[in-house]
Image (cartoon, one colour):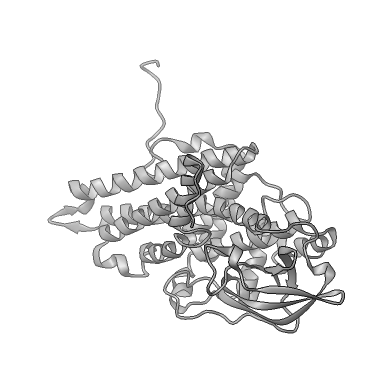
Length: 396
């Protein structure tokens, strides 16, 4: 290197220059999502979280659809057809605003839309995907049940044939978007094994009461799905897929988005801690000038940087068609756990102010307690990776 070479400036939130690994298109996607979040979500999200409701959620869904982020990694049917890495960057920006907003987009695109796109009939795809991509129809994904979480093969929701129709009975729990959804992808046990059904939520016997009294993901609609003799035509069933292959393929898509999304909550908390430490004066100088505070900031940044490198690597593998489910489990396990630790440390930097919704930290910290659990608990992802390493399944 020449002695006259000018080095690029050091960026506190990109200390190793990961931005240099992104293409111009990837940066443009990131910028557009970040701009929408700054203008449409961030000024209001603390209030939404405190009140436990999103104002004009359908209007927000249409804005997200107009931006192209709903089902953005899917091809055709009005979907943007963007790369997995671009989708990941969008998830990061959305979760930097709030995990609940990223959940809305993730459930819409990676669960409900992906299920229809991957396993649905041409009729189902044509009917639902264009409207869902535009945000004109909202979807949800019914797999988890009140007593069935990590072991979906034990689901109690049943679908039985009655003449040429299907009749569904059962309950689903902790369903994002359920109360506001126009269509639900519901998985049920049948005589032929587990099957998926596309259920318009206006169908008689379907209801979706909202779950209240949450202290996490409050800026998100979470519901129970109740199916009481829901009668559907044969055409409502996914035609080919049987067993857990169907729902697990969808969960893998959603987990990939979480690998990136959790880093958004981490980055937002790290930025808040850095800004606060530079402004908060104690003993005559900013607390960022003290060694222990600097250690906290550096440790947070190291964890964030490692997580971002892992997410980008997995994104490149997914774009190359080489991403294995076990690798997604590694990303979800590592990045959510790391992001939660970043938020907890950031809260300590802010002291008493760390519990105030005037700052984003406690909101992100509470949200990540849910993200740590959904789409596979720490225990389940640990055992997925453990089985891949040893060849022994230790789930039972």
